[in-house]
Length: 619
Image (cartoon, rainbow, N blue to C red):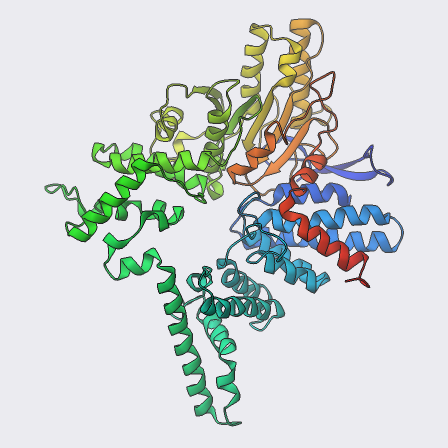
């Protein structure tokens, strides 16, 4: 990848100008590369913390984080960084871990959070332990929901073992301690947690080692009675630890009255719909609705029910009543699953699956209720190029785009998709989520991942920008109204360069290219450049390029798949305006990131790191 460098200084920084890397992106577009400036690099790291299943990509992000912390320490030590600058940036980095994991107001990403916790352990072990603890237990003074759930303990331990090769790593020991402490409390309390549900099982190949370590730690007194060097006695003691641990977990799960236990005991009719988690209801919807397996339907036989027992029929009726009454529960279902399920239902085109349609639409509506208020006037642009299939980025982007359209009263329910060319999709007449997906996919509603010919090879964002500007110019839209708009681009940012840009022309990023197009459009209408509206670059894939810098005005760089992140663009916390103009130079990627991390959910982390690093004598 071709790279060059240029100096650029932040107007708010006391540091000398730093070097920013410029490069040519994957599809030939100019973009910024990783910076050497820690303040810039923190924003870039946040932007690239996007779901990925490749260990090499996660390892690269771990190296970036390690270098940032090391550079901050070195900068403070050699005087190149002021103490207040060090504090601001190290606190942001620490809270970024929680924001990455946070299933309520953050990205909800677990593997990327585990990576950061392990890196932090290399510098500040006690701070890393606190991060791990807040995944499942918040400080006693806080009534906030933890950043994750009890399933984090087993998945973090597995990640830690894979990365370090040490089954006895101190963080693994700490996770076991946290788990067993809560387990002991649950045996004595009337109200219990879900820790027993998420403790690893002995028969799970990936977690059997952890089950044994937890069992031996919980009943450690059994092992202390063993005679030294008596292998057979030690084995019997360990077996007893594991047996009693299994019994304890089983007992607590019965108290939890989990759906899975009722299913295993063939007591489906006793399942209380309101006790079913949204994820379980979604993933097992066909079982609850008693819909037959697709493979069980032969050419000469058409089943309408999976099972005809009274138990299953009664369960189905209970679920149907629950759907009709309106499902009221917090939804943690991933947007990609909604979109893929809708495409599957549209493809099957089976009128007998109306119950499943009703459930999916009801769950989607419940999901949308997490976005509390009407969004600012925003145009949603969704990249539908072939490269967006990676890690389901396309499905996540479509889900987010539909959410924006549904909450955007100013422009009506519209969404723009772009690949080689762009297209407007009017969703005004779509009564529900499934009909909205059908309106966008049109005749190409078959499983996109199996039919990639429906997607364009490359991403031409500028065709969509030109289409939007054509509408603005034709209607002679006033400058104030243009500036009040927002453009939110859901993409992996692998765009092709503008067609009118020469190879030898100056370095022009996507931010600068859009800015110039708006200026030219304003000249046509008012003989005066249009002010660039607020641009949101929503990253859907972890890469090595950036569309703008952290100091660029009136622009946001954000990433993640949680629709609740859209709440950042409401009146109370979104695109705030200056007194005389809608253009606000104080909104930059850096200030927007700081706003995200000012969430009261992360206050305990700021207090923790400030006390430990800056007031250790009082801690």
